[in-house]
Image (cartoon, rainbow, N blue to C red; front, side, top):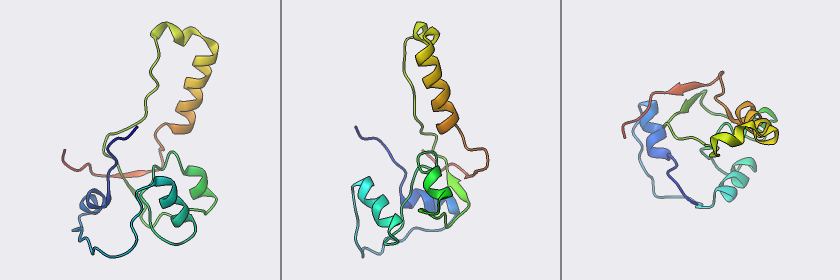
Length: 114
């Protein structure tokens, strides 16, 4: 499954800086490889802070900018409304919200057009 993931042009645009592709260097299309390279100190990656909060806290990833880019995309749990009365589903929903809900300490950048 794919999907839109904001990239460097959107990030630099939100910072108010022009993005100029230098056309040099290694580019990886596999998200797992991008993260491995960044954690090994071999590059820079745009990551979802909700998914990598522990890596940031442990110092495996470092944020060069305190602001975030909020493009309005997110993750969704889709279930039948009647299923919310199921204890297991309700607990799983609560766990998802606690672990992947909005991080209140973040300072989002202004949204880009789209």
